[in-house]
Image (tube, rainbow, N blue to C red; front, side, top):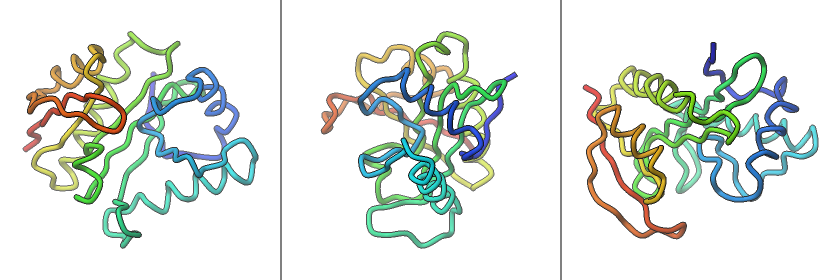
Length: 173
């Protein structure tokens, strides 16, 4: 049975295996990994996990263009299957959405994204959010189906730095 857990150094090896399976690129949404993060060394990985933890409290004042974010890993039997993030605030949300997620290739087609998104929508409700914005690449039919399955209404398609994306709103009240 999968579970959502806060990022932890305990699962460093399992996370690195998932990261290696994905290969290079920006397709690991939900992990909060930035180009400046160095995760190959134990110290770098610990610093990254500490940064994610520091960004998690919703009321914490953050640097310019940063927002509070709840990061969770999708884990089963100590194997990292994916990640999901709930961004609260308004500074980067128009560019990234409130919720972003990714499932490692070998764990796809099991309903994990649908399950994890449902859990994060519950968290958004607890935080008092009325609706959330989600985005996916225009050709990512699996994510579009997942979002629509949770009531996502297509606002439209926009061009971004990473290509065209579908923009969906989900009402959660």
